[in-house]
Length: 230
Image 1 (tube, rainbow, N blue to C red):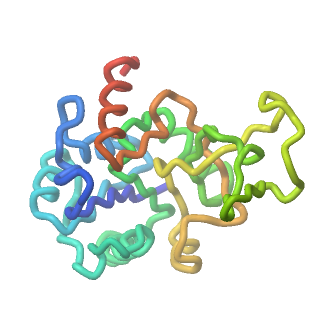
Image 2 (cartoon, rainbow, N blue to C red):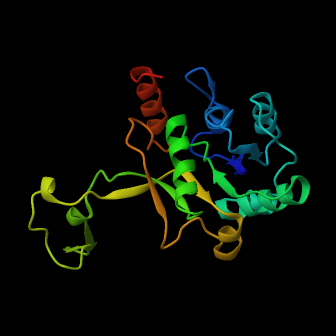
């Protein structure tokens, strides 16, 4: 099986300037997502799609393939990750041959573990190519979530107010942004990694659900790395 890993790293981070090449626990943020799949047998290449020369240089130094700088039309705030992946996939398949899957690794999820990535690839294999999406236990169960309309609260769950204790509710999970894997055919046809037939890659190790968007997230990632076995 040939899987192309794509790390999508735009240069225009506003909340944390230079985020993708800022050092986290001794190495650039983007390096965490590159290194986690280096040496994985099923990963044929690790392609970094970026619009920034500084990110490209750091990614190449970390061992990634950076064949070009991403077009500016795919480097705006509105550019969807799947469009970036389709662009990278079209170039790769046209230049280096077909692939069986595309794995999107967002650099803002640096704490995903290699064993989790391997579980996700095996799940993709067992599921016959269904999309595999990384999920983590929800911090707030949907039974306890509400719409607020003016001065009125309405439950998200259509059945009404929750009647059970939280510990009696079935587990709930949220997409964490750390792992997306799908076939080229699915991505080209649906233009999304999501599907009604998604296979869940449940990620429960401490910190794997951290998605760095703010300085607070960054401090949380640093604290988590300082305290977990690596």
